[in-house]
Length: 156
Image (tube, rainbow, N blue to C red):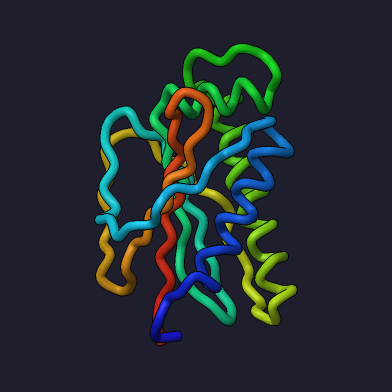
């Protein structure tokens, strides 16, 4: 798969907006995709989930800590002010649901993928992007709160 196009990116966005609406009652608006070096800073919570099969790569879902707390609060239905283990577990499960739905959407298109368990990172991180471009798509909701969906698909 040499070229990544909208058919490869849209299932991630469809699944993300669907799960955010169903689990968090958030109507997220999809922003303009752009190429971004995968570097994250101190106030960032990151969910990393790989995928293998007929398409290989990884998805990273990045939140500023305040947005992650807001999402966790909506999922747990109680106020979350810091990313404790319960909040990280909720955010991790959100990533799992998004990627599970993404895999289901791809399967309806005849593309089989399996996902890895989610890894949660917090703080300053950088990742190598030598094997694939990292496409970032911002999802915005409420008062300019942003969730970044990072997608890197390995070409053949």
